[in-house]
Length: 429
Ligand code: 4AD
Image 1 (cartoon, rainbow, N blue to C red):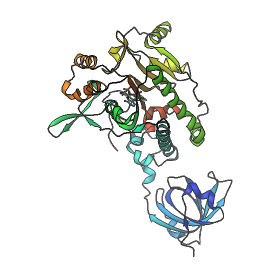
Image 2: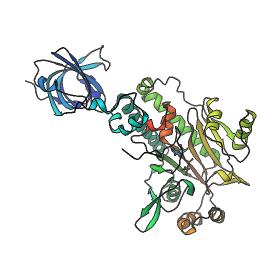
Image 3: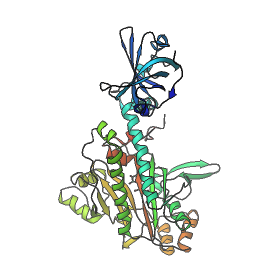
């Protein structure tokens, strides 16, 4: 009886054709063919494979009792099999149940259960083939973002999430009790990235950001993954150029490495965007919308449906630039009057996935801006110091990781790009 063999992850089975291996994983699906034959789809996180077990092998009697999600250990021969959806199967010689499951697994949820049930059972739903694939792709996007920043010589930092200085305005702040004080969950790491510039040079981070936005849309989370960049000694055009290169890199690398998921989700029209991306100033965008009969006037916000209107018909990324100061945070540098050096990158299917711009680098003007929003100046003293000691032209942006995945994979809702989404009415599981 063979009970020892070389441990193998499912994704590496192809390297062991004809050999004996040990695979451990979870029973994804079990089908019984008569009394003598079991087909098990086994999952180990790296992939899926088919295990074929015949009556008479050691451990078969235990296996026959097994339910979906039981953890098992299999020793068997790897055989190439064109009929198997996974290309290979493991013909079991020995099986062990490491940990059983329960028949109640079948009652937990159905693929067509309501979104609420699926979210309640997210801890089980994420084990599914499609959901786990999306989560693996999220990891790829983080990798591609990091590799781009590293290639450009940026240094990764890990700013605090608990803060006193609001970045994006008071309306969407989550406050927390911090011993005897009130503190906030960060809306963006930007202010800390700015502080890191003179110490480390150009920097980036991948951190959670929090927004108390009461928006029930396909693209809003209350906690999301924010990939941010801050660059010193640049101008607005250079910032836009850098942003374009990043987006191109994300798409290019996806096309190089991730055909598997594009195929699975039937995304067949992903193309590398061409530089320069189209640009519209806020004024031009408002005029275009007006011309198309949309009810909007100068000074109004370009909302999600308007963004989609602008970008969906274009079918490629679009920069909106130069928003009025009334719509942007205090720190934006102005081009003139109340026009900010700001940019949002819109993409089809989602709208805005990136927001950023140039930062006010003059101490007196920044102080004035803080007073205009009635900020507690003491909370921003350190931030003002950055303009006292070696202030330089600088800018940056933040990319919403889940929104980016929603765009590239054409997901119907941002929650699908999250391990455990935080939504207005959901903080569990
Ligand atoms: O445009 P935002 O608010 O920009 C900032 O926070 C800047 N301080 C970033 C910077 O310059 N370092 O947010 C940036 C991006 C948005 O374009 C969007 O992709 C994402 O963050 N985002 C959200 N994603 C999911 N749910 C929400 N509620 C989001 N709010 C913003």
